[in-house]
Length: 348
Image 1: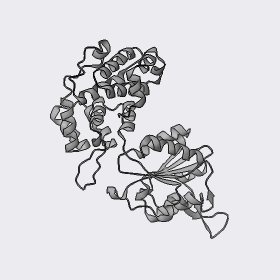
Image 2 (image 1 turned 120 degrees about the horizontal axis):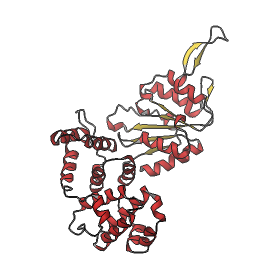
Image 3 (image 1 turned 90 degrees about the vertical axis):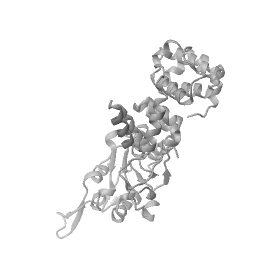
Image 4 (image 1 turned 90 degrees about the horizontal axis):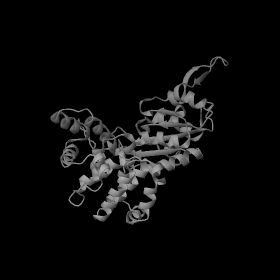
């Protein structure tokens, strides 16, 4: 399931107070997705409880054993940390169990009481608390031993999260990821996620490592150092292909030049990687003032046989700035050939 679909599922599950387990390779964005779903579902940031069962022991979900002051010679369990906060909850609350598959069987069994009976050692969870758990796949080489069978059945559904270039691109534009990185991954979406477990001290391409790669590009390192740091972020093969792509953009016009004269750029002779970079940059930087020029450029793209890029430009521009859909320019372009492509396009 791609991120946008899983977000909708999580919002629905939170509203129904049902538990969900998310499974994926490392670096696909499970944790970030839960935070986004919480915001949409109206769960306040301080009502998102995050636990890491992989580094806990059974007392974390059960409470600390202590002498019962009311019954001499008997012990009780005192809640602390995440459990204590969950027990005090009065508003919609999500308890996120991150890297749940790394937890020991004893810790998983302790959480099972909370997941099923919603109580442990006499402490009852309020109805407003919902569980979401996440784990890497067992084959990912991340120390995941799996989940106990009785624990798995305590989740209403177990959903696999897959990397998706369309969802990632939408997120990346809003997150300030380097425009060239977005354009490259759109040009070769197979490089978005190629996780490979290894004992070597190397990284492989994933949404998380590409975010790191984008940050490395912002450090303004010397050429050799920049390329070496890039290799360290996403691996030798991915970094090499990106820098080869970047070299193709050496003569890319600045967005301001296209805003000033949408007719000047040579569309027909431009390679696909250049057009991906151009439309991505324009979509990120367009405003109500420059949208007219963007629409004219989109019409040129369609006339010159590059209609898929015209659709991509329109869709990205209006997704980032929904107010553009209320402009006369947008209403006009929808009535023409570009509008027909936009309504039926599937390009990412």
